[in-house]
Length: 375
Image (cartoon, rainbow, N blue to C red; front, top):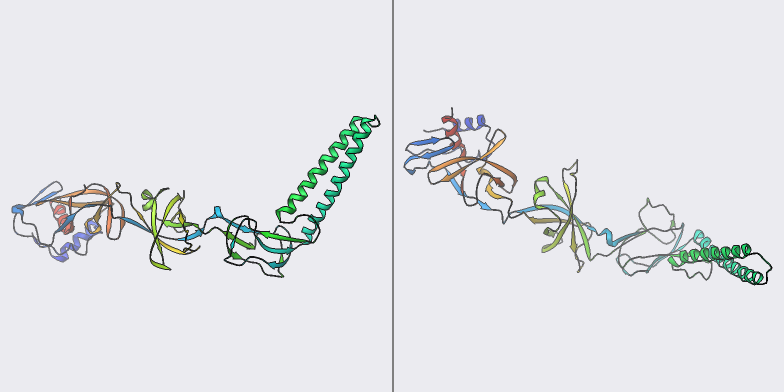
């Protein structure tokens, strides 16, 4: 039963076989009888046609997912600092890339609005003193029966209100590092966390506003832990979950391998790129890694989900995938379920067992025999 190359390609086209057409066309049948029962082909006398090549199916212990992404600042350890008052920059106190602690002054600002806050504190102190004196007099007059109780209660309420206003005005100034001992209109932008100044958008003499639609005056972050954002495909979802470990490399250190842990897989697919965002944490204690670096990450596929077979072994007929399994001189065609294809291999979740031998070259020839026999 000899099929020419032209005839085989014609059969391949008619069957809609889309995989493995390159090498499987050149198969010459050896002499001997061929027996076909259902979807199994048996070559008599054990004489297998030349050109049929088979290899063993393996587990996917070495299978990995390759993902691209970039490093980002950890937002839980990053602050963007804006001026709370309009004013003019007097002095820059923190250098770009410099280490700062909680409360470190970053810049000094001259602000008339802040001067008003200083004046409000002075007024509140004066009102507090007056209210306390009034309360002392009211207590004395009430003890001598000169005023009614309601007048005493009013004096007590006025004193409480003055105390509260004084405390509020004082806390506002102290949050900017001002002791409240004078009116000079100077305020300080301060870091609320320990970290590194990674961005500065402020210069001496610059006029600041409270508009937060513009870039922040300073960005301070703790670079010892970074976030990583990866772009994954839908086919990778079964192997991605919170707690999955991954390794990655960056172009700055081509021979170094870094590690991280997946913290979250997005609940939606990007409608434009069809990618799924995967977030993870990366320890960066030696601070070699920098924010916005591009990375190439590798995540192991789940060990118990798939078997791996060569992509050249799979025949696509209609909308179904098939593979030929060899057992000595018997070749059985089976329908399989393919979950994903990667680097010349496919992940098969149904239809074959670990260790079975599948045809990687010559599957089109075998399919042609079945098609002819089945009419």
